[in-house]
Image (cartoon, rainbow, N blue to C red; front, side, top):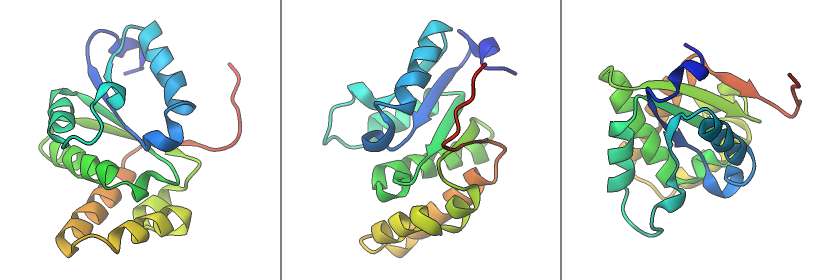
Length: 157
């Protein structure tokens, strides 16, 4: 199924490190979704400082999740908690997920190594063992899915 055939059929949940990607990659993706009438959810209108209940509802309403892993994704407990919720929905067969590796290697996400791993382990220092285990399982599960790798090269069509 192509992105074009998703128009007006699916709701897409975007999981990403806002501070890093909101005004670059995500803004282009949102523009394309709007042009093709693809229903999506991005957290720009969510009140800051609130709990994640509303985000979890949006994940539950979605049919597809795009998880955009970037070098700073794992520094956010919100991103990691979203990822755990996404994994749970995927495990139940209620959500399709497509990982996008934005200037990071899938193996670094999967194994929490490299710059991605440095951010993860820094966050893990302030977290509990069960939470870290859930995060690691979610990272491994989602990063093992067929996805897209986007580096520094530009592609012209």
